[in-house]
Length: 467
Image (cartoon, rainbow, N blue to C red; front, side, top):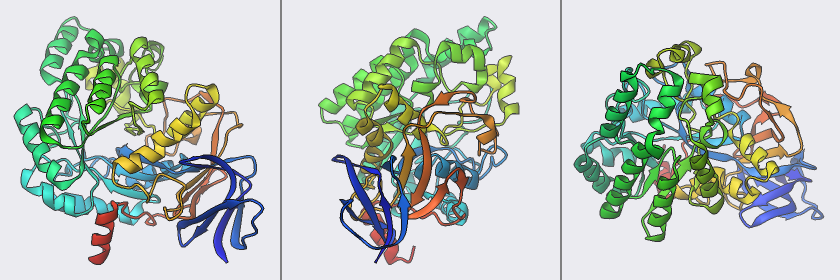
């Protein structure tokens, strides 16, 4: 008898939707069978009229633990993940202390193992050259650096997580290339930004509008020049790279050309670019909308890149901050902590975009699940409803109109920039390896049940060490 049968739904597989039953045995997908096939099961979930989808693999998540637990922690992040259909999270290194060596990485892994409801990995910063190989051997799937230095604040880009010199960046790429891991880069041309923001601040425009305009200045020149450099260095080193925060037409075109030339580059769009980046958002929500402003032509290019596959991955860049850390931004935006919480609602926003006709279901599912799993070493393990993969499953009602409110927010920060937004799709259940972590509006998963989501070869090696 099978452990679990999800029956009556439309199962969305990599080859397309299918009116079928999904079978789960021992935490993995054991089969996808015609509804007429009678398979006895210990437990059955009725998904009639619903989509049965793969869980989201979110490779860009700021848990804030350790060091900034007043904003968020691993438990609350994973609770939001469960509610939002995210079954695997990759944390970021901008912590206190920053994740830059084997000691800090092991501490973070231990913290996930104690409290996460969903599966996990972590992207340490490769700023300590001699630690790169050791951290790679611990099962990470990627490394992460920032090419930015904060002006007027010391967070969210703390010392120890940045590389700015191009020679140093190439040196790090050469070393990471030998590990086979992917290198996530927050692109930024600091010298240009120093000049641009200096002029804005010199005019006394330390406001959300001034900040938004500075980062988008000259059609996004600080992003475009940095990405051009990163792409050329990736070609020179053979290092697999992943570019965060895609938001300009020129950058998307540059990545499109690099892919055509055979450079191993992937890139991501974060929730704020397609859904929270208009000038009206900046004016009405101010610091609560920033992250960044994406002017209309660039936003149109983002949607084009999402549709044609140039932008491979949707990852949340979940970046919670307290109201106090945001409120100062109304009058001193350069002192506010930038970034917005996003993990709880990104999948549903993507499904709503499908209902609106902005994105096909196949592209939405590939962006949140298939591509991040494949590009970060988890293909066949995560990211797809296929036999032998982990039974990370989401059940969604595509005909459920509802309104996001701050009252439903599970983040420790207690707010969402989407408060008051009405959307048309709702996630009803989330399962991690066949076990429900979210059901009918409640988080039901147990802290500490998440496991390290290591790549196939690493998973085998770590299991041999008893890890």
